[in-house]
Length: 279
Image (cartoon, rainbow, N blue to C red; front, side):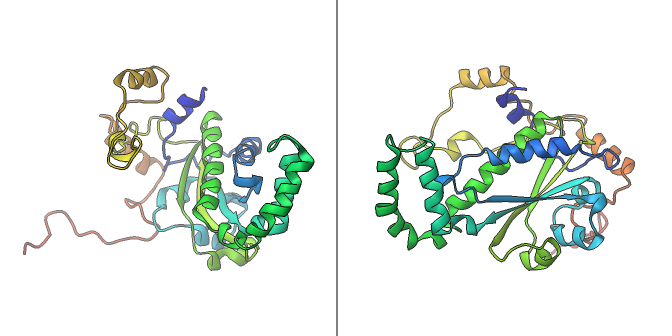
């Protein structure tokens, strides 16, 4: 599958086949994709812990369950707990990483000259800022890039995924033996989709003109319809949700998987239709 098609076919999957295990090699491919992601200074601060549901305690599954994640947590056979390792930005390691980039000819043209510039010029500046940089937007962006690459490889391997909000670190720190330097980013459910791959159609996104700008804020980046047609042909753009059969598919999935009619990890009482009060 080409990268544009992987992006186009990707859906947030919330219903998995609980009886079908995920092959370890496919998880390895996802992790390798994350390891190959771009990262500032090659510090590689992304970290992940693979949690196989059948081997996990009920306490651990409860601890990593976010409020909005009932179907995913009930049916996915694997979870990846992604976090930002702030220690990766430690000044000594960061400088070593930059020097390694010089040695491998990734930055600069002369390795020794470049390393001299790094140690004499960058070390003093980074020494004063590495702790702030370790929790800066750029650090979390790099973790996100790694997760995005893992996600696309998952879809290329025929899997589905769902990224959910991260739980509180203090709740699961001891269970996963996390270091104090860990900052949770998200929990990713992984498995074989119980839904049709279309999952009811491509999720509707805001118009490009409202999200991206040309040269300055307020000047919309206007998409070319011809390019949109090209992306449709390359299977990056599909039919918008909801497809006509989606409602029946959801009912079928809920019955077949024996799930309760809710989306949250805890039941929320909902008054019967027609019993609302008028003000």
